[in-house]
Length: 222
Length: 222
Image (cartoon, rainbow over the protein chains, first blue to last red):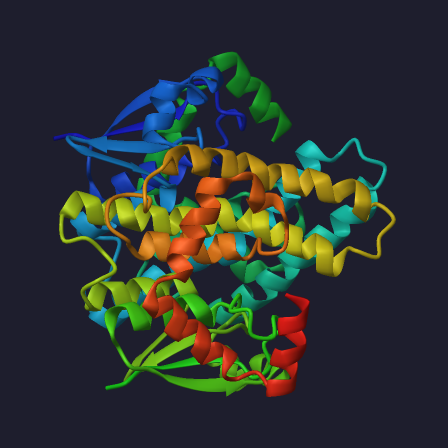
C-alpha cells in the first residue's frame, strides 16, 4: 500500500523546500518508497477533518491503511524503521542516530524557528532590531557546539542517517541568514545533504507544485 | 548492566523536577530499571570530558557499556524500546505513541521554553512586559489544540505511554504560570501523571539531591 502524506496547497516558502513535508519526502526517496501527496489549503488545515488527522492543524500527515501519523520526526522515524537505508543495523549506532533525530528537532530547530518568529511575526515591533541579535546568539551557541562535534566528518555519526537528514533540513532553514557562513564545515555538511540524489528528487517534487511564474520570480530573488 | 545518567549537581529548579533528568528517571521507574546517577557541576558540563558525551554541554547523558546517548527524548525512547511498559505492542499504536513523543518535544515544548527564556533572560528589557503576552499566546494556541484532542480521555492515545510521559513533563514546566489553569482537562492530565507511583519515585529521587534547607525554603514558596 502506498502511503499518502499531506503538504501545503500553497507553501509559504514558495518551493524552497523548507516546509515540513520536505524531510518526509526526502526520507521516502532515500529508501525508495513511492508516496502520494494530498494538498491542503490553509483554511482546510484548520478544519475538523484535517484536525482529526493532525490536532495542531499543520502538515504533514501520514496515512497508510489504518495508520494515521503526524509530526515529521515521527513520520521520518516510521519510514526509517520499516525500510533499510536511514538507520544503522548496529544497535548502539541506531540508538545514537535516533539521538541525533531528537537533537535536530528539540535542541537545534527551536532556536532557528525563534528567528523566523522574530522576522515574520515581530518585525513591526520597535524592539525587533534589538532582540534579533539575542535570538541569533542563541543559534550561534548551538551551531558552535554542533560544528565542534561534526569536525571534518562527513556525517554526524558514521554513515548518513535519519539524524543527518533531519539536522540538515533544520540547518537549511537558516538559508539566507548569513549565520551559517561562519561555519564552513556545517555549510559543507548541508551541501553534501543537498547533493544526495534522494534530496534532489524530493526537492524537485515539492518545487513542481509551485506555479511556474512564481518559480521564475523566486529564482531571480535567490 | 546498570546504566548511568548525569544530572545537575545543583539543579536550577531546586527540586521541582523540571530538569531533563526527570523524564529519564520517570521512564526508568515506569519500567522498573535501576539506574545510577552521576552529578555534574555547571562548569564541568561545559568541559571537554562532558562534551564528549553531550556535545551541547547539557544533561542528561546515558551510559551503558559502550553506548553513550544524549537527548532526553532519545534516552526515554531507548528505555521504552528495551523494556515493556512505555510503548504499546500494537504496531500502529506504537507508531502513534512515538508521534506524541516528538509532538511533546518539537511542537509543544519549544513555545513553553520560549516563555522561560523571556522570564529569565529578557526580563530586564524594557519590552519584556509587552512581549511576554505574545509568547504566552503562542503557548495557548498549542494548548487549545492539545486540550481539544485530549478531551476527557485519560491519556493521549489509549494506555499511558512514553508520549504521555514526555507531554506531561513538558506541561509541568508551566507550573506557576496560571496558563494551565484555563485548561481543566490538561490540569487533570498532568495530575494523573504526577499521581503515578513511578513519577513519585522519580520526583523523590531528584528532590533528595537538594540540600534540606533549600527544600524547606522552597516548600514555603510553593
